[in-house]
Length: 273
Image (cartoon, rainbow, N blue to C red; front, top):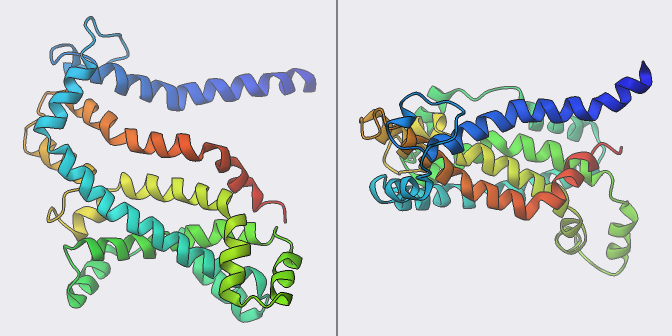
């Protein structure tokens, strides 16, 4: 029985992935490739006439996708840069200086993973600061929300790096910034690649916080899709909605393809110690 279960586990895992990920992905692609009439009742059947490129072109021209794409980049790129920079620095200090104060700070730092932010309070604070409805305010919100995730991942990974490497650099006269920039940061590439994927996934697809913070003053891809769908532009046009989803997902697929070699190492590296 044990041998049978050992052999069946990979098959069961593959079957689960196909059901949980493969079926929704297949539904999105085949619906995006159908005509309006075929897509009125979305199902898993193949389209009689593949119109994927035509639907993507129509969405690109009529859905203001280029403007929304630039808006998403304007938010995502600075958010990722700030999170990786400050998160890696904080994680390095928390991992290397084992004091009670740092233990408390680490607990507070990762508490954001389980404690959701109060949206109303965040919006009121941004209004007081004059950042409501701006890209800077949205970047600040995302940085505060997901900094806990970066600290959690990077701290465990830093603990697997031998301190002797840093001590050798200090003996050669390197200061703290040089040690971090020249020694520690290059070794953090696997876990930072993982954090980049997670942050991009969260921020790129977010519509909840973006709706309350920027409220349509800056178009992002999810907000733009919500707007055009609510306005009735894509009413009963499921083929266009799913084509928009395909376009919106392509940048994430590219990022995933580039960083895939480092993702597993980043996820498992922090579990060594």
